[in-house]
Length: 573
View 1 (spheres, helix red, strand yellow):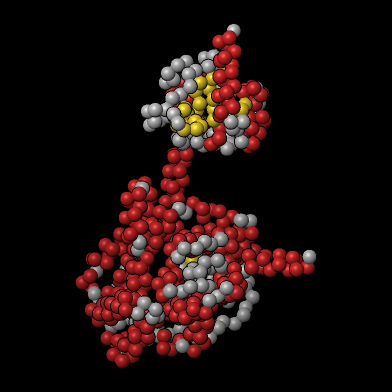
View 2 (tube, rainbow, N blue to C red; view 1 turned 90 degrees about the horizontal axis):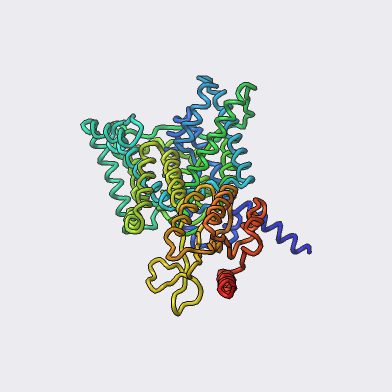
């Protein structure tokens, strides 16, 4: 009994902390990959965190604060082996939109409100995970995931073109950004472009010749060395610049009572957007690497990551697609990558902020473009085009939505179209008129079977779906058509309910209308193989009594035998 209790406690702990399972089952052969991936992720995460911190309206160093504890929290609570949680452009925009009206230019108040907002967001995510709201991600079909990755790849590449060529781009949106890029080609700083292209080519060569080498990290070291040796900063190549060293002091955030309303609305928006963005990234890489993730646990993991960020004066985080791409590209095998990256970021904050200032921004652009290029899944697109044109178009719409409207709006558009497509198909499900095929047992669809024969005066009809509000009218119209096209006037209409697991009130009302219409034509409605949920609804709506106990049969065969017996009785009379 005691042993059983201990096992149950251990099982629950492991379910709540998937990272412990990863540690218990960890393979030594993975550590080299995770170590290199962790260093590589950190090398890319540092400058991106600084940029996104400014986007959120906070001092640059707060982006690093927002990158350390979230990685540690996710390593223990997250179920994705590749996902890197870190500052994200969409969440940073919401943070700024929420806090600027409240704090204005008061930097201390801004930091306090950011901490409160981030912790509130984390609490909402944890509550959603406990309430098992992760099912929302079930609408992310594989074509959507493929389209998302392709759209992200194009967005990352287009967003880094200006940096690679040595000039700034201010436009938002993929096509506007490309238009501005081509219009500014005359402003190209050729030394910046040369450095960036050289790093990009080096990355591609390393991937082919030495795929296990930490290419992004090597690129960063080469960039710093080149900037130091050739004095690139003085020659017009933009460098990262210095950031304050050390960890922030622990503070207790202050908030006014009038702030709670706007902060709550902002936290709800952050929870929804950050979770959906993280889940699209997590599920995309889970599919790519052939494993499953727990969406409810991901809600909890993201919540814990946000709380960690808030406690360290950071801000809300999400799944970081570019850093996750770097992790996957280098070959990270488990959540240990996040722990390594967190340790490296801590070391950078404490000891290495000075050399980091020499890193050319164009090197970061080359690293991101290289990682994004590996995300673009052209073979899957070709496969979708060959197998299903509808899903191929859905994938293209997702990509187009991501590069034009943004990551989350693009995915939401695609999910909406997928739901509409699903409902359209579900509203006109497959059905069949059943009959005998010589030499084959049972009853089968007569469509496309020239040798199949229906039984005289009996229609056996199968509807391959639950009968619900969005397909009930189609069901009624199909029965009218089947009755009208019958070779002989039927006496019985037998509904084979084997493929009809459930019926709602609208479906029951339509079935009652069908029963009345058939009765007016002296056709008896009977039902075979009704499942328990269907029988219960027919009983509750009164249809079971109207059809009568003699109208229900356990199998189609039993119903056919009863029909033949009644026919024999009538002929005998």
